[in-house]
Length: 345
Image 1 (tube, rainbow, N blue to C red):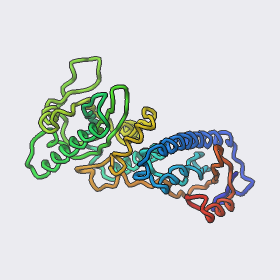
Image 2: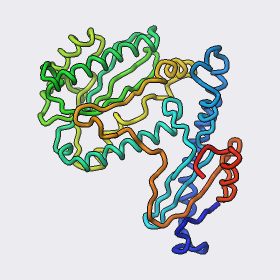
Image 3: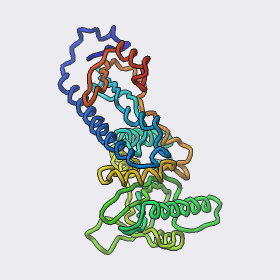
Image 4: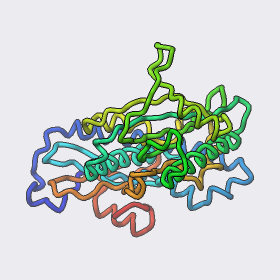
């Protein structure tokens, strides 16, 4: 159902839109993502109810918000750019459990990071590197054991950064100006794989020694290896250090994907693994910044798209069971008044 915008005078009801089919395909694709997520969440919530202590972490209000995510969707078609976007919804924002919210947060953070780079030009002149530091693990270790090693790595890393500022340390991090980090988790037959993704910048060029195995495209740093051995009780090691090209917005987006993305590979986790993961991380922030990127609010994102002065038409949908039905603006306002929607009116 089409809902005209505040700029209806510029595009009256009789305006032609020649690409309804394309718009419908975009809307259907997004709806399918939310419907799949909804089914997965219902299955997960049913699993939770088999656990005696699930209410210690998952309150009724939290579960209601989780299952209500995406029950209202507002799409916006822009005449000027001929683009269709998901403008707003009643997002649950639980990106550790919700695939659509994890994807949307990552997308917003990537765009926010690019805005920061362009508003602080000196950052574009820096050398940028992507570093992956896995934590040692075995197939029979619990998530908490491996995660404690990761936290030890994070604390050691933070201490070295602080020492660098106080000029009391001299190690690999001494040449690093700042950066962002994320913690990524997967589970395979080899157990819990938790690793540290780092995107760092420096005015210098890091001394990298190419791996002797030329079939691999990763690098070894002796100074970082020495730091890991001495500061992490040899519980972490270098997987890769890659130099990144930030010469264009497209390259920046491509290189940001690995760092500013969802913290969990949902497809690799069973319900029991997801419960174990969330039980130990629901109070933890798995992403952060340091050095010259500290305080730039890279991760403070608004899930709704900002207002645009372009001429547009809105398409409103409400999830009814396992289907989406179109809404009129008046129906949307009624649903919000009676508490059926947690999203914007």
